[in-house]
Picture 1 (spheres, helix red, strand yellow):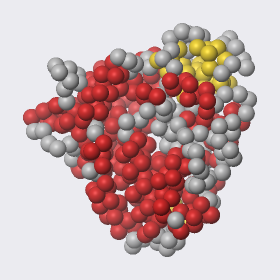
Picture 2 (spheres, helix red, strand yellow):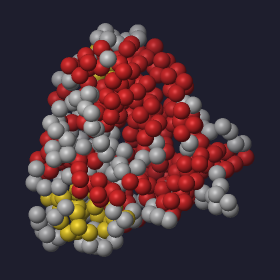
Picture 3 (tube, one colour):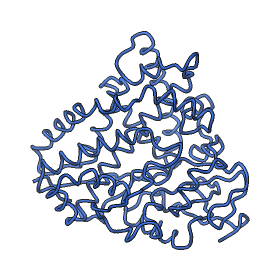
Picture 4 (cartoon, helix red, strand yellow):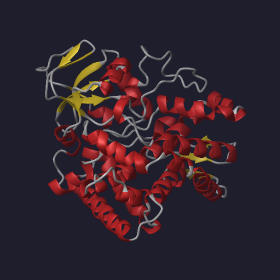
Length: 405
């Protein structure tokens, strides 16, 4: 393993637009050399990429690996104006205890399991409407016609975003999800636009509160404590972008995996009770995220047999760890009947995704409805012609053209 003075391995190809099999193959090739890797990000920053499952699970629990603005700036390359950066980064996913504990407690009080469970009938209604629109088509791009509109409608209704503004949010969040690989001017413009609009929404919810999550976040208190202005806009940003982009990827990547594994698709069609287990295997096999958010070593940290010096960026490689052959047998095989599927698609530890139950609920309803409505569903191009969008964090199909009948 190279020491900290060794020039990093250039891994830009992992984050570029590429075919999904090529991305997984690149991670497998990297993982075969060990669980921890000295790398150089496409932005030029040196970092350490953790690809081993056991090492990553321990990393996500390690209090010496902290969230830090210097680690987050590796995602924005210091391109954002300070006021915009502050308005999108002061959420719980970027904080350490005790601030993380405080923020998560406040947000969990508004984003309750009851609120999520009550969404099921509405998610089914939205799904049925989208499927009805597809029923008259011979072919469609499932990303644009199904995987995107379902979760963005759900998350915008949950937050209280008016319908006429949702197409703007989709464009903004797609740019921000691309991160440092996006055009710098477009990246700054998208971040500023989403901050300005969330601020407008917060002002409206203060004077005209409704039965939605943003109103609940504005009102939530723990004694005299409540979310600050930047914390409110940051949580709105986190929920909008992370809350729907990941579900888009769960649906589109999951459908692609099933269509390219016809025996698993046939098994799921014949035994629909396997759908919850299938969602977990799809999350493991080709999850919505390449990476969890970056950490910084607060002191020298031992990960596996590698000692990482203080002040270094550490990248949790979720996509690679979920196919670690030392953790799961035959990791490149899709098997919806796996008994033990302890994947890390939603992270682990104190930063485990608070929205994971909602993503799973949407995934079950979406895939169940799609497969039931279109028994002849199939790809219309060879899988090697499909492309995944560039990005440091997301693992996103650009398009998914299918035949419906």
